[in-house]
Image 1 (cartoon, rainbow, N blue to C red):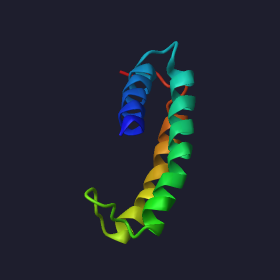
Image 2: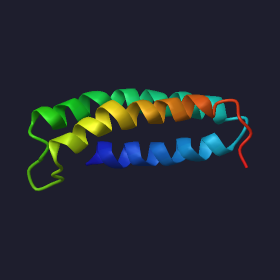
Image 3: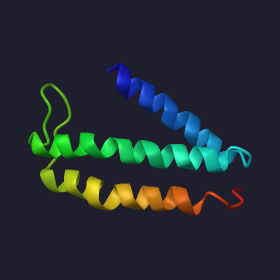
Length: 87
């Protein structure tokens, strides 16, 4: 539970960092590292039958799409905004 809350807070901080031009590159790198760090947990979720006890249950195809499609798209998005002017 602590890891979930901590990673959520870090994600929010990094998202704010993307909006700050001087922090953008560092924030983007942090977002990409977090996304890569989450890959093993997504694989574990899939191998455990995509349903954790007393928690989230999703169809297996959604878990695979999240791992194979959404994660790479988020990494691509993060990398593509590293030098852009936002707003």
